[in-house]
Amino acid sequence: MKDTKNTRIGGEPEDQHLIEYVFEKGLWSVRYVVILGVIFGAISAIALFIAGSLEIYNTLSEFLFAAESHIGHEEILIAIIGAIDFYLIALVLLIFSFGIYELFISELDIARSGRDFASILEVKNLDDLKNKIVKVIIMVLIVSFFQRILSMTFTTSLDMLWMAISICVICVGVYFLGRHI
Image 1 (cartoon, helix red, strand yellow):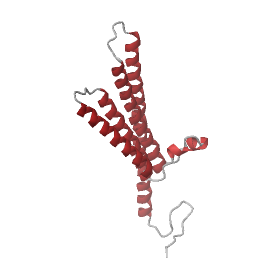
Image 2 (tube, helix red, strand yellow):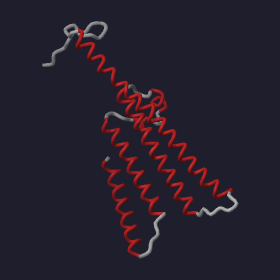
Image 3 (cartoon, rainbow, N blue to C red):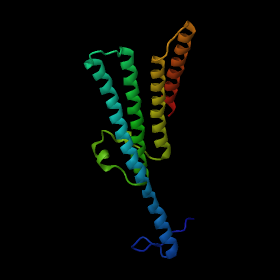
Image 4 (cartoon, helix red, strand yellow):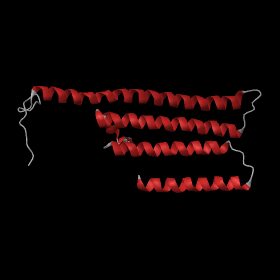
């Protein structure tokens, strides 16, 4: 049977010692240190969105406006995929920031009022947060893989076969990831 304690108006249980109450209140207040992770995660995400956008802007401006543009379609594609990497990592940081804020501080009421983004922010526990982050990190790895493939030179048909097999393995992995996480 659970022992229920009578509580005073201030929230302090009647049979709890003052030192214990002060300690527990202070320990509970330490959770606000996650604000540092939220703030710096959000700032890092903004920096990565800007870096990715500058990557695309610089690549396209060099391609479109440079008099002696030596940049080809393949280089444009590699740069844009690199920018997508920046964007995806920024999303990881945003999801992390939103998630730890909601888990340790408070729900983001303004986001939940619109109902449009509620499913993105739906983090009930650390496992939910981990699963959301893992999915995005796997996408970052896939995008990085394809960026590297674009810059490779294939000398034999065996190189092409290995590339096809690796793409197939990634597709199978993504299929199972979508079914189980």
